[in-house]
Image (cartoon, rainbow, N blue to C red; front, top):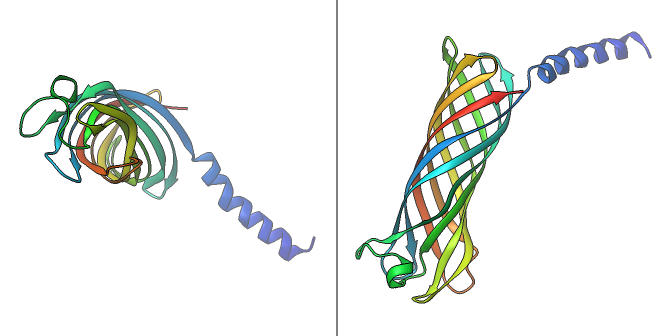
Length: 202
C-alpha cells in the first residue's frame, strides 16, 4: 500500500469514526391523544377521539449543531370506537351507514427526523414518513373486518434532556392516510395526535 492509499484510508477512518461514535439509540413510551376523522366513499364520516399508550424506538446521529435519524412508533388504543359524525352513534350500538373506521387498534409510524439545538438541553425537530392505522372497518351496517389505511405522517416536537440519558418529549403529529387495504370499499383517515413521552438513550 503506497502513501496515497494510506492517506486516503486515514481520511476515511477520520470521517467515519466520529459518525459511528456519535450515534445513539433510544427507547421509551408515554401517552397520546388522537382526534381524527374517517371518511368513506359514501355516507357520513366517523370521528375518533381516543387516549392512547405510545411506544417509541429510534436511532439518531450528530450533525453539526443538530441531529438526524429514524424512528418507529406505535400508538395503541386497545379498541377505541369511533362515532358517526351526524348521529353520534357507534358501529356497536347502531351499525354503520358507510365503510368507515369503526374501531381503532393501533397507529404505526416509521419516520425520518431532523432537529437542532435551540437552548441548553433543548432541541426542536421535525419528522416525515409513513404511517398506518390498524382497526375494524365496516363492510356493511352489520359486519366489520380488520383492515388498514396508510399514507403520509408529519410531525414537530421538542426534546428536553434531564441527564442520565433521559429525554422528555412533547410533539404534535398530523396523519393523512389516503390508501387502504379494504377489499370492497375504500376509506381514508386524517387526524392529529398530541404525544408526551419519556425516552432513554442507550
